[in-house]
Amino acid sequence: MTLKYKQSLKEVDTILNIMGKEYINKLPNKLINFIKENMDNSYISNINVNIPINKQLLKNDTKLLLSLIYRSYWCDKEKRKELYEEDTYLKSEREKNIRERYNPDNIFKNKQQNIITEENLVNSTSMVEYKEPIFKRILNKIKYIFRNF
Image 1 (cartoon, one colour):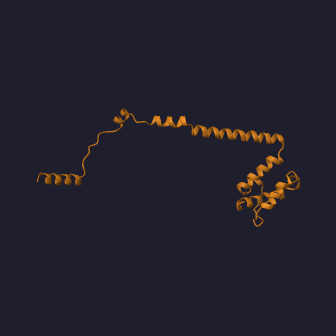
Image 2 (cartoon, one colour):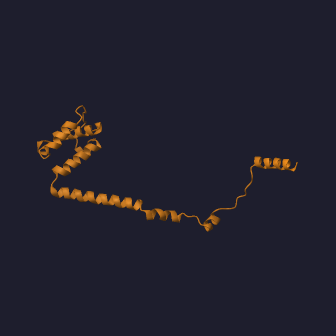
Image 3 (cartoon, rainbow, N blue to C red):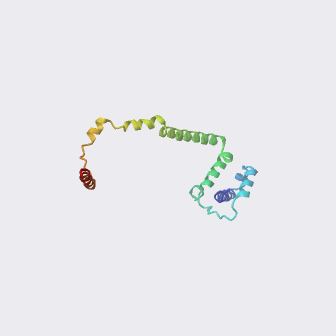
């Protein structure tokens, strides 16, 4: 386990200790033991009791762990169902956006619109006179002189 996760576990442990026994008692002993055994004991978390938890500067993994604990052990069945439906909706919207963005039919539609036709080419370009570079003209004249001898 990386140091980042161990520090997050330390922050979760600190928050659990602040919350009190009623919340800790709802958690399985295996989870509590896992947190205690794997947390970084040397890490000092910057959690302040006087500041609400949503205003604290917590690690992203700490937020994820706390949300998982809340969803799995602390919220009631109605709230759990509501969170599940919200997650399902967000997941389907994300998949829909990805499907629209990477749909093969749409990829080829954009390419077909940008095809240059001969009519567009004539209308958008003009004739350009081509001149040989000066050095090439001189070289050609020298070659012409030596051929005639």
